[in-house]
Length: 119
Image (tube, rainbow, N blue to C red; front, side, top):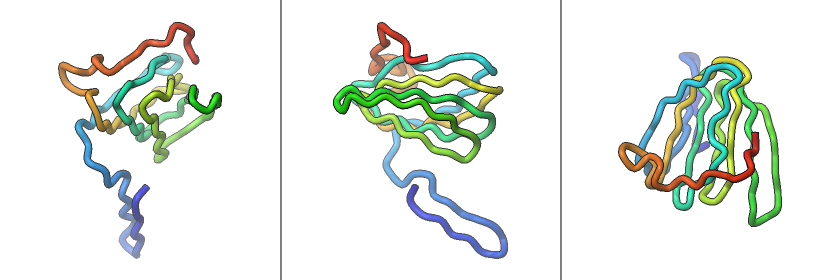
């Protein structure tokens, strides 16, 4: 996160200050799983607007795998090559900010599906 300003009126917080190619809203019903893929070139930041989700990431280069739980106001980053998936623990709405070929008609062109799902 870039910066935060707080005064008696409230808070202003930059979520990202990088150039972006797309911002996508995704709604996921409780219990549903999304992802189980990686991107060759795209960096993806997921900002949770409402709900809770379990996030699994695997960093093949480092041999690291993590599973964490996240809720409103949190920002998760998936760099190119990071395998990732999420499961909505309750109805969840997110904004996905992307840099790379991951929007519009090219939405799936940079996606590599995993043979063995993370979630």
